[in-house]
Image (cartoon, rainbow, N blue to C red; front, side):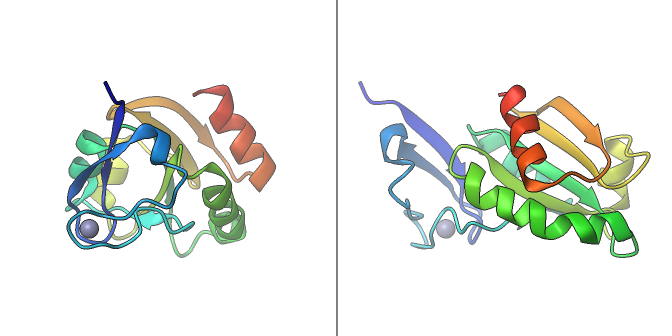
Length: 144
Ligand SMILES: [Zn+2]
């Protein structure tokens, strides 16, 4: 029997079943053939949020941010670098709380940036305040 990992394609939103031992082999979407991992955080909105939470077997780390927030902008390159290092074991995503106020309210975001680590659609851990790449990775690994 083969272990498979469910992954939502960031391009067409289809759910893929990837043999777990092939996660490191740059898997592509069976439907649209886009790479399932690009080394970049993805954008989550109220439209795609639930699909990602329900249909990804890997944990999702979400950066709740806003364009007017200085520390958020400062952290953005560190977060992008963390995506390169944590994929394909963790999916990194960003939610613009200015555009997606409902998602911010739903998760009781009181200050930004706030990082929330989700597993199986549930919050595993959260951290308020900006972090550097090494600290982001260390924090995620301490909770997975
Ligand atoms: Zn696709």
